[in-house]
Image (cartoon, rainbow, N blue to C red; front, side, top):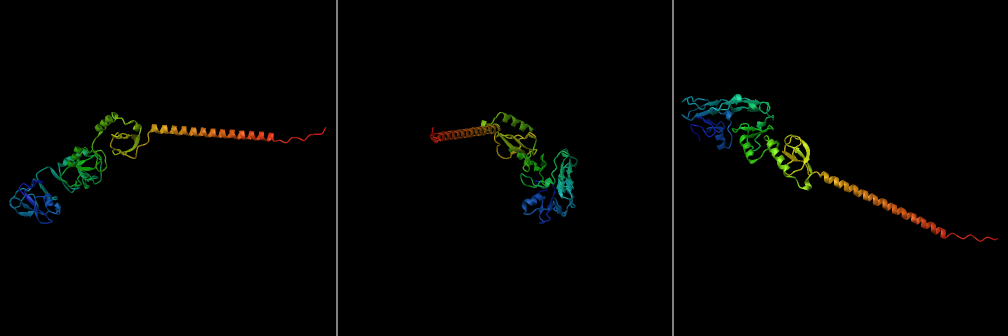
Length: 301
């Protein structure tokens, strides 16, 4: 269960007495892996020296044999380990690997971040209190480093590396590009220019939403990708079906106008023929009346 040099997680010369079950473990992680409950590190009050097996109050040096339990010791987290420039962050509530001067605590994100991100990151309130969207494990207290995406969301560094290896380039939460994609977009420009769409799709357009700048726009349709007119990103989502080709629409309109014109001409011709028939019937009636007019009576001379 233990060794004088600690465990796979920490280098220390003592065992923690779990306040929950009273069992001795090198660290809380070893405890949690074996038990069906979790150890509260903050409630640890006793440790056992790995050299002389003396159980005593949690402290950095054994009161019996004077062995040093750890180069670093935090009396809040009860963390014993070799020196990694650790420091306890009061707002985070836990110990972080330093050195302290290279990090700052962002009040809105509620997380310690590297100094080069000061004023140079998108804040998301209490972002580290959310689980990693890839592995769904805790980020805030994880021993695995966190990677800050341009959108402000966090992933475990190892999960981010797995994303890169598999070719995934979007944040699992908001779909924003996870890193600078300008070179890739330029490559897509070249591929699209060399891959024209079939004639029946040339001129077709589609409405899209850009996942990077949230712009709504109507752009030419292409199977390789639709480019945002706002920021030039191909990280877009199609919003609806294809919009009818403009050229085909004009041709259809011309055909409809021509059909209407032909119908109007046919109607006018029918009216003219009907008028001619009526005039002919009137003329025949007049001639009939002339033929049947009574003769005048003879007059006397």
